[in-house]
Every structure is written in C-alpha cells, then in structure tokens.
Length: 417
Image (cartoon, rainbow, N blue to C red; front, side, top):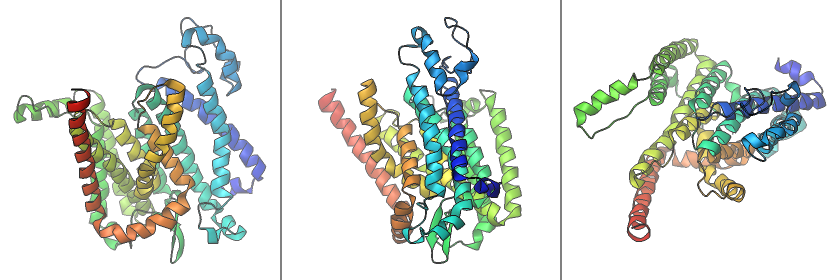
C-alpha cells in the first residue's frame, strides 16, 4: 500500500491529501460541535436548529458550504461560520504541507543525512509516520477547539485516539519518529537513549504494560474519595461511585479485552511487542507527568489547577509519540502558550485559556523541530541526567507546589483578603 502511494506523482499525492484534509476538517467540525457537553446544531451534517431553514446538499461542501450557512447567523450569532471554515482551509493546506515536510525534505533526519538517496530510502518509513500523525493532528484539532469552547476535553476524543495509537504501534514500530544512533537511524522506542534490556521481553515487560493499561482504565472510571464522613464511608462511596454509571461495564470490558490483546502481542514478541510497550510507556509517562502536576498544583492552590481532560490528552499524545515526544511536547507547551494567549485574548478578551491547546501546539512544535530537539539536545541531556531524572522530576514538582502554595498565601493575604 505504501509503495503504491509513493509511486503516484507527488503533485497528485498533495492534491489528494488536500481533499483528505478538507474531509477530515469537516469531520472535526462535526465532532467539535457534537462531542462537547452542550452540543450545538452548527455543523452542516447534523440536524439544524428549529429556527433554521432545512439544510441543502451544497451546505455540506467543505469550505464553500459555510458561505451559504451564513444565513443561520440570526440563530448562531454573527460570524459563527468563520472559525469552522478556517479550520477546513487550514487543514486543506496544512495536511499536504505536513506530508511534504515529513516525507520529502528529510527534516526529521539529521542534517548530514539530508541527501537525496537517504531521503528516498527514508520515504516509506516517513510515510508511515505521517499516517500516524495525520490521525493525531485531527484528534488534536477536535480537542483544542472543544477545550477553547468549554474548558474541557471529552473522553470521546482521547480514548478512541489512545486505542488507535496503541494499535498503530503494535502493527508497526515505524510509526515512531527516528533517532540517530551509532548503528544508524531507528525508531524512538521507549528505551532510548539507553540499551534495550532483554528483561522487557520477559515478565517485567508484560507486567509493566498490563499495569499501565490497568491504571489508565482505572483513571477513566468515576472515582471520588470524599473523606468528610470518615475513611470507612469514603471507601464505601468510592466503590459505589465506580459502578454508578452503566459505562463501568463498557470500561470493564475494555480493560479485559485490552489485557487479552496485550498478552497476545507479548506472545508474538519482537517488533510488535516493542512497539506496543513503547506506546504504553508513552501513555503512562505522558499522562503521569500531567497527573502528578495536577495533584500537586490543585493541593497547593485549593482549586482544580488542570482538568483531567489534559491528563487523558497527554496519555493519547504519549501513546502516539512515545514518552520522549510527550515530555518534549509538555515542556514546549509554555512557549506555545505565549502565542495562544495573545491571539485568544485579542479575539475574545478572555484572559483564562485552557491548557489543552498549549499541549497540542507544543506537540506539533515537537514534530516540526524533531531533529534539533531530540537528536541535537534530548539524547545527550537524557544520557547525562538518566540516573537522576526521576528524582529531578520529583524535586521540580515539589518546588512547583511550594511556589504555588506561597503564591496562594500572598494572594489571600494581600490581594483578595
């Protein structure tokens, strides 16, 4: 399939990807307005508002259809159609541009390898990477704009996305971005920059993968620990809450099916297991970092510092990119925030901006600057800091909590109090 795709003229591939980008953007707009907490009948594929005229087939033409839908401005507000139209324009241009960047320029490779022969040899691998990123970018578009609208990211976006990422990784380890090692380029699996130990293909690898999967499924459950009436009641209410909604049966089924699937891939071994375990560890570390900071910051500020949707979003990103890409995306998020905050404030005059768009833009920057970030800086730094990396993260998280605690005291005493 990949060889057939590569055999097509580049101009035809770019044109087809532009059409695919428009279709995915239309699907994204549908999800943005339908998967949120308060669905709105804005997208042309849904049932129109009772006050609106019936939809026409031409309304469903990407980009152009929004000009006709301007007639619904009295219902949805002036200019409601501009943002979804711009999303479709951006993806119609951005998707082929991303394909060209990842497969034709060699920008994911070190500068010394960006010669025509190396780029041509890398193209099948780069095409596999792009196919995975195409899904990731589409999901991040949906998550970003729902988060802008409602300050939340629904599980309907991140859970299927995470499952797709795990499936991709089990099918081909070459969905992961490349690293430059002494033996040449290879996918960034979980052990880099260290050596792959045989123990990860034995019981330790199985229990690690199964444990991460179990924790993720547990994190998705409706769990609340309320200590106001004592520990015994708190435990009783906790387990009652887990089965309060019927979704617990679906979650239980997903957990069991996932364990069976993980065991099957573990039995196959080789690259399928290496890819799946890399994706699972990316899920665990990516989500775990945000979860830890969320707990510490919320305790220090006595308000919810980050929504749990940010945790599940980072789980999904980690499952697609591995833990290395997730960490880089997380630490690039504050840089991305500067641009987002300025643009968002100019448009809406709202100073509070959700964290999900930062994470998504930080992830995109990680992909676009992969070689200088990972091969040029991350590998060397991680090799040096590896033995103390966990303790460094614990210390930085504790310092973050202490700073936020002091800021809360200052705010309560001198600003609000």
